[in-house]
Image (cartoon, rainbow, N blue to C red; front, side):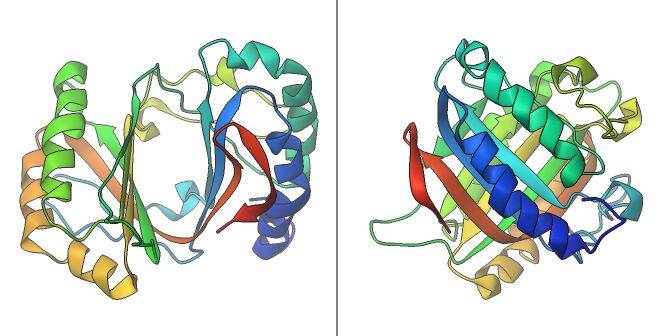
Length: 245
């Protein structure tokens, strides 16, 4: 968010006027805003040789999670995207777009019927220099997913593996897009829990410590953020009359 105004002012504008611009973009299957807590030092347990403390100058305030109906969807939304470009200066200081190829984003059914998400966390992973990109993706989509799902406490599980970051994919005017190579991410995981207590227990569990040790050869940074809200504006290809929380 911009730093020349209160953070909450920016969060409210993003949640309100800016969301209306994005929601009207044709070709979306889903659009969610993931609002992250202001105080987010890093929830992932301390791990040798892995950055788990989130640097204050690179801390993320929120995530626009966009799922497209097809690979051609960006062509349908060019007019609305131009409006979004112009509006970003009203709310954001820095924006970075991470994109994934078809099937790079995966949603898993981990909740029983009627179970709801009462708490969330987002994890960003940075691949270690020299680690195989293919091996990294396979670990995220297979070992990481199966180990997390096996804990039995998750009510939501989504993974994303990213294409190499390219500034030209989202180079809005008057907004920073600096993203040095050693600060880039290569995957993310969204986790949902019944409540904050279940989230806290998960991150202090033996299973997460074991995963951290397995990730060390592949990941140089694991940043885990607390989520304060996950707001859905477009669902199943339809703009909702009011966002769902």
